[in-house]
Image (cartoon, rainbow, N blue to C red; front, top):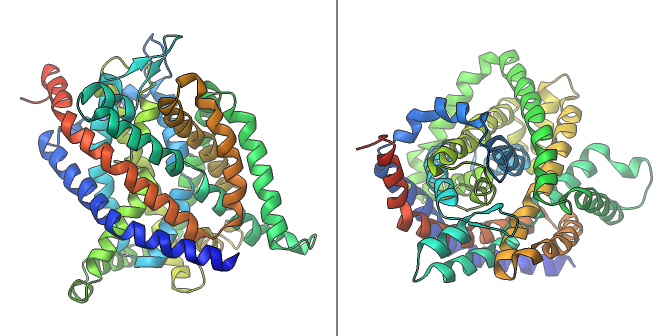
Length: 449
């Protein structure tokens, strides 16, 4: 079994290597183009975005608040709590700078992609909207659109599997609860049990469809984000003397010219981009699948709300997590990685039981992520077959939770990075090709000349 897993890891590394460079140029290069294309104007509308978030329109679909909550349920959580720790473990504190840069660019990408998801969408037999990358590819790109949509949807079937979340939830349970101290069944048996429990909990919600998912996540996510924010800010205030040195370390490591000369600099940038893309999914195309179901009538309204995603999950939550990991010094312990590293950091800085409080939040974040990711796969499978058949994907999704609980985190990260790269490439091609439609709506609203 271990030999098979090791071979699989090697294959994934070989496949990911060239694709990660393409993803780097697609996200960073494409995002910079869109930044100049929009003249940076969406950044000036952040206040309007928050106002739109809490307003409703009488129309079919879900509210903007529900759409953003569902997206944040998929991005705020283990990607921010565990993914940041993995990035720092692999690339050091400097990787945070490149996560911030990618998040800022990601806000522009989400503005464009989620605007397109409302501008170019279809309706189902009940009159509810069907939007997302596969639809704006098919409707907006007459020649190659359908082929790109199929490519995106096939990659999406694997990219949205709950591999990372199920794996890290299981790892959290094994390291914090230490179940063998109660009943000695062995690691494999306990992981299997956790996987089965997570699959049952997920099935109870996701088979209820989109409205069941957004109802649960819109109640759970805001409360957990608020609690995590308060806990994180308390830790930073209590250790305020260490915050400025932590920022100094972050920037000095991010622009370490010695690593640039030795060839490690671009590896650091790629690592930051990869983890930021995993954290907020900008350019991947997941968020437009939820925002495309919104009640919004104007695409640019939805685009502004979507911009709040990277701002909240990467700029805010990832920064809090990263600072706590660095200040605690836990990242210097070689054997600590992923969620275990973050838990140790919180334990050190929050009265010795911060890891237990974080554990509660991690499970709520993780469960909500399991709920929301399933819908992405349903949309992809429904597009590839028939929309009414989409829910059959959930059976495959539930089974993958158990598999993900048993394999190593390296295998899981490899699968996600490969799939996200394969989703990102056609999505960024489509966004850039269709960007003129977004600019036209901005001009019609007198936002830009």
